[in-house]
Length: 621
Image 1 (tube, rainbow, N blue to C red):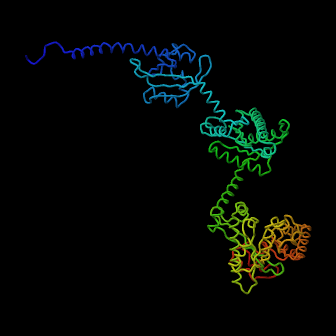
Image 2: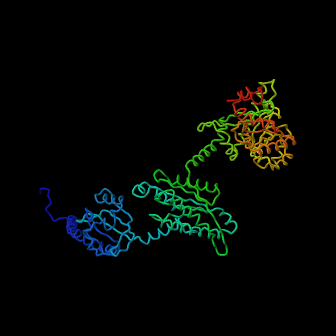
Image 3: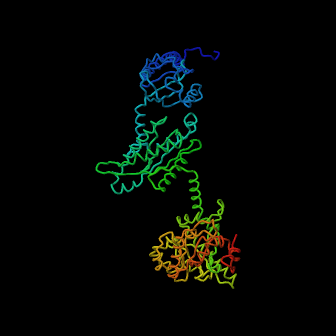
């Protein structure tokens, strides 16, 4: 034996041989039967499908796809798949489809609106992916699912989400969606006017309707307003190219009309006029007859460089102007007025920090005796050395300080600084009669702070005598004072502080009421003094004699009540002469000196001469 077995094969060997032969015979039959099985499933599948070759042409389509598209499935062979399911009309989808064709992307899924052979349309979800294990038929599998019912439900839900249930108008979300789309570059760079307009309106006094008649009536009124606004928009569409303006309810009693591709400001202004006219007739709501007006803010501008936020901020600002200007009107956005408002807001935002940073300073304007021309006192006038806007006079920021309450800390600073300065002048000129300092006080300081305690603390701290401090309040603030304001004024007067009424003659002018107030000085408003503005020159204008009669009567009555009188805005020597003749005690104005820095006041102290010559010489800046 040579070691090789020549006997019969073992059972194991026979089994392995049988299995191998069986597998070899079975494999060809399965491969031959598989395409047929695939074709059977493909043809009978309830999902619309087509096989697409590498060039994007339909190789075969099943009956379901033919039925979906309303055509014979055999007729689809050789057609471009992209045309059948509208893949080429969207650049992004077309690019993705081409990537799937060349194998650079594994799948494309999108939703397209397809048109059937009978003209009807449907929404379909289209999927394109490589055909797996296709044997000798490589390519792509295109599947199409009808999602029209789902799409319709989504649209209904979106409509509910994007529309106001009370007025059935588009709501804020849809309005801003349309506005954002209108401002996108590709929208206005391919045709159109490149302009946009907004009418932003608010119903005047709508809250009173809700409070008086209830929210149900209020809702019915809003719906009726919406109908009239929609009619306005439809009528406006008939007078120009393009669609009707979009009418939306932004919330509450606020509505907006969006004019895309506007032709200019005049068009949007005409729409605002039409809106006001449409709302003018009363509304008949069952047994109620209600009238309502609206304030409308109008903005019209180029779309380029405009954002939805900026446009609506401008519209909101302009609506506020319309209300502030008297309501029941439209107002056009004004960039200059808006710049002023923005400056005002910037000042308001930096007022309190400016006090802490020491950006304020005081200037002083002399109060001069009419008889001898000597300086009797000075009025402290605040200036704001703003780092951005330069030196600001009080009329630029005092009203803001009163609105936000910063007038209280600012007023304390003015009082303390002015009293310290008055005391320094007194110590620097011991041989001269001490001059008083006059400080303006806002009504809010009386209400929001303990003004009596502030004054007492300041006088004690500075060593200034109470009679050398004069506090000025406007006539409208003092007249009719009762309760706490009157108590504060009396407490200050009892302390020895002088109280002056500033700008007297422009407000209540209730002279009889003066006898009940702890007032010691009247400061005549400059409007009266300006009536004295003439001299003896032949070509000079004639004065109004009534001004002199009125001033003389006020001076005489004030003197009878034990009050002194200061004339403001004295600018000429002739004015000073006439005011002195009718009995004014002191004068203040550019004839004597403009407001100056503290060191300039020292030059005025002790100067006197005929009339006001000495003061003029020393006080001219």
